Image (cartoon, rainbow, N blue to C red; front, side):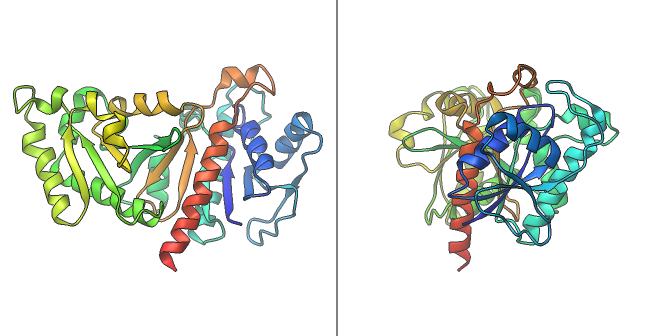
Length: 334
């Protein structure tokens, strides 16, 4: 079975609860190692289900007991009150990430899954932090990563982004020939190497309404996007477009597609989240390791209500996909 490390995220949010529930539910299929505070997780496990057994394990030896939830223990800097942030625990959250990244780079973990964290808490403890994705890229010395979300049934919809968390006014300048070429190349490579798709097909959206309507509604499609797609095709990548985004997300286009490349965050993700919210998975492409995550935030309001209100469906899907990607990656390297 694959060994998947799960960072439990912000301790005052729903991350610890959904991590425990998912690890317990998946224990017969995946060897899940939670990275968090063992005492906190043990306390929560006893309240969630008295049959849950939590066992602390050594981060180097990783001797994983059967029918128990393995935990790599990380010390908290402050007591946890569910639903209430405490900046003193910002360093704790980063330490769980560091342990997961180190273990994945050293091949002790086959993949990592991240529960949601609170960016403000980490910044408030004096550490500049913009997000999981950027931190993973920095720690693995990866020059460019690509954000992809996946979900929906029966055929999963995958949406990758050419730009991510930018104000809309800054998006056009961020879309360049070179950046699009790098993005498309990363998507193509990881669909092959980490998803086991030998001949992936990518559909690219335009930037402007009606994909620019032959230049009347903008020239980015003519001057940048179409030339980049043509250059990618010349490298043997099956990418087509640019298509008008308002008509692209139809079954007749998607039924033979493996991924849609959207030009900005709110162009592609509303469709994906409508199809799969609560069961969607966030994937970071381009890294030397496999990383998936849930499709939601820390949900402090839900955590404050007490245990039993958090839905762990997205965490289940994130662990499943991480295990599937680990198997595909091992097969491609064999």
